[in-house]
Length: 231
Image 1 (cartoon, helix red, strand yellow):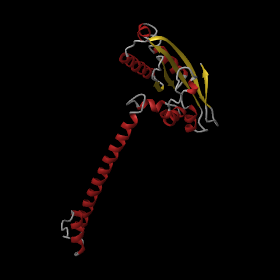
Image 2: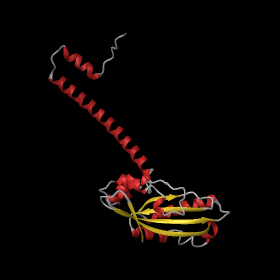
Image 3: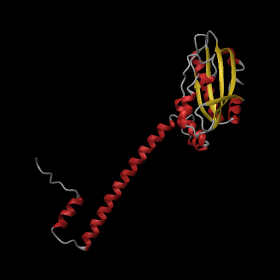
Image 4: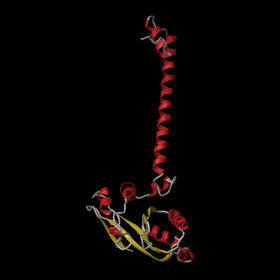
């Protein structure tokens, strides 16, 4: 196998100095060369680290209810942050019936409480919107309405989770919003089309009927279950 005779600048310096005493000038040059190489390596590592951190932040922001708004995360209480990070990403429907059973039976609340652990305690506020859609409704417009509802909820601030279920064979459906506190929940309700568009022309367009239920979601210390109270 042929020998590679190409040496780096640093290797050449070492090779030259191996057969002769190093002068003061050569020592200074060597030190400067080593310093330059060290700075270049450091800059490369910093650039790589910055790119990796930026990618992680972008991936994390995709899951936020407020994309590109990291101030939302900073504003959360410790218990809200834990609820948002550890439990809510795992929220899933476990009941085939999301309309005629209590909301405490619709989702995997116990699993989420276990993910939080016994030491965590907190209270959050949920709004459940039950609706019966008209026989002939424009699904595209209804999806746009749901997106509008979600955007208004975000603008109200304090929204931790928005979930919208599929309508059953009887055209009944459930939409859920979870908020950090009662004030944000009530403000969100007031700003929602439930009290504006849905209570007027939109309700005639899309729904035969609708109902709003409000629940306080309670997680007590030393427990791995959620409790539900109306508010």
